[in-house]
Length: 356
Image 1 (cartoon, rainbow, N blue to C red):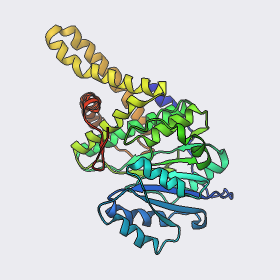
Image 2 (cartoon, helix red, strand yellow; image 1 turned 90 degrees about the horizontal axis):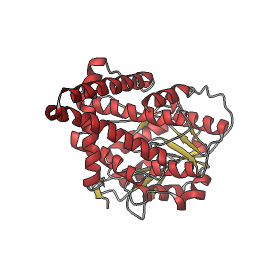
Image 3 (cartoon, one colour; image 1 turned 30 degrees about the horizontal axis):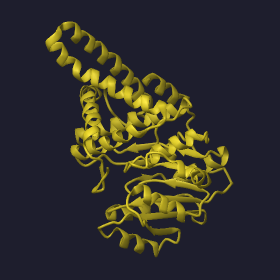
Image 4 (cartoon, rainbow, N blue to C red; image 1 turned 135 degrees about the vertical axis):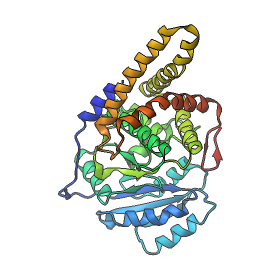
């Protein structure tokens, strides 16, 4: 499976915009936020530097009942940026905020991202050119994670790299399984056609993945934009606890997947890593032959992982040497087991909200 993802990633053509495409599309960028006061100034400054006509875009900031001064900060920013629209979500939760933003958007093409992300100056131009050239219903785009100084930061960066390469690799093979709402584009018309059928409404997160699965089930055209210019960048979680809770939230929604390939992929990852995690303990009680099986399994999987990450780490600007990678590989099965089991028993939470 990992080698298939690698093959799919390598099939995708890398695209760099030359700003030669003269067509126009109006883009609405939807950004739900809750308690993001510190990030809004940087976000709007970054967006104001886009090499894209301000007459063909609007940025819709959707306040999800912030308890800090985020809403007031957004209103102040609106005074000096005419393309900035501020919306208050009537209902609670990111999914409701996204729907509020989409309802108020006037653009033909919707682009979603998060308030803590940043982009290159060619981000929107690259998206627009790809949309006008290929006319897809959805564009899945890369999300990179900035490196940090701590070991846990670098572990998160490599884990996220693997997730991104699986996302792109599955797309390259023509069978998409996941996407990230931190960098996603879709036709408003297509969204409205299928909005009543979107799966996973019982989960706090998953607005991106369930939308992808719904588009896929409707045979809408979905493409992957392999372009560093179209990449959004995010940051590692602040602590080990936040990181694990985030991954448990992501893993928990896989129980709601109706897409068979996505569900089987998630199950395969859990089973293989659980096997590798528990095999050394089985060997202590049942003999050396089980230890030999464990060593063989680790070598096979580690080789596959190294091959996948190496194929994409330059594109995502990840610098991980073999010693660090090996240390991550020893921890990874126990991390997957912890996140997988935790997602079954720990109540889903996001932004001080609890799920069902």
